[in-house]
Image 1 (cartoon, rainbow, N blue to C red):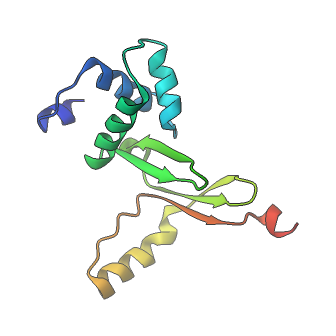
Image 2 (image 1 turned 135 degrees about the vertical axis):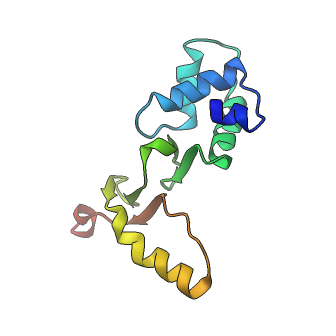
Length: 134
């Protein structure tokens, strides 16, 4: 919250509750789950406020947004650290992969395209081993 305040953003009670909800989750959380957690404390927050606040946190680099396919969008604080999700498009299972896998891609993008890729939190869609064998 101090980071947002130092960047000139107001910390309203609603924003504070949303930030607390995502920060104390410890893992990924979707906007509807944030909304449900905040609604336990107050009814003065609507889902649009949750989405706007989550968008602000992502824009300011304080949280990351990950699209897990089929409309499943999750958020995590930047303290959650870099990671890759392998998402099965058939059964929906999610496998965490080693971030080091992407280092060669990141280096190649920088070298060949002068592009600094943000590969801190990504998802890759495909088929898990079980679904491949069906």
